[in-house]
Length: 396
Image (cartoon, rainbow, N blue to C red; front, side, top):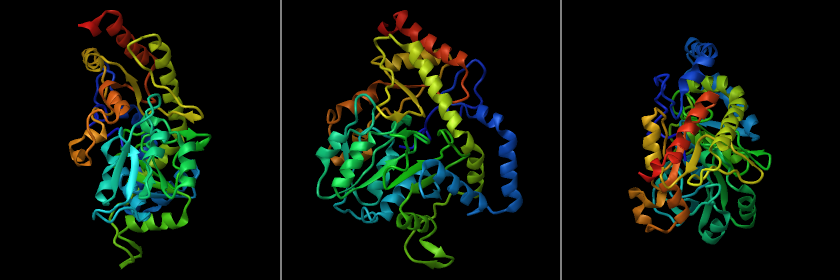
């Protein structure tokens, strides 16, 4: 779910030299907005309102409006956002095994499924669509049971899941539709912004995201007032008043400094997403016609915000090595699908159970993608990819 994850190369590559093209370059964005960022951070330091300060409420209001929801609750990270939505909906039994089932895709970062397990619910994995790599609604329908309490579509790589049939299923069956929105800030499905289509959306503001802080951060978006109130209490030790605790909560608050940084960045998010889409279109143009590569496809009535630009190729590892030799950094999102992770062997899924997810895991390669890239860099990456195939290196 919450990629770029902590182990992703590129997030820390801000010291990359001029001769390399990183997967992600945060330094360029920081440099462009450094005066405003410095001023925002200095204001927090001057006020000293480091916890639940004014910048947090300001960001929550602005991000709710951006997503088209009534409420936004800032929390400590995206994983906590998902966990507190589940807990607020009484799914699971606080770490005690329950019969509650939660359906989610086999292909995602592990943070999508971790909260389900930690709350004591049972993850039920299904395969993804072979074209969009998002949760397959038909497989969700087949996996529904009387104990299904929630379905979590992941807006993977920046592309919204196919929400219309999932929303219809949610109307016809007693389960909650929860959006894992960590990779798709600002993407839309049928003109609605993600994070507003289900009962709630979970966002991460990890630094490499389309909207990233300077550390961990997350948010829950919803238009349900009861859910919003409960999440806010859960995130703040289960209280509304100081030293009066109505429930057992946790400590997961978006700190004021990160909120101040996000307030500077949020007005630029739409333009950054537009830039990502333009670079993706150029990649598509320059890489068209290579038979050994599958380019990303966008589903009908959806906008893709290209948190990642992911191609598929049977020569993934060799191509990755070739690009590295040329100073081009790439990534794999993700090399092991959830059902084959050692932590989830107990679910009993075997190799071959989810063939689309397994094929993507074996073939996917993320090429450099960030708004501040240059046209020359896109051409350089595409040229080296073409060179790999046209010079027969994939046969070596």
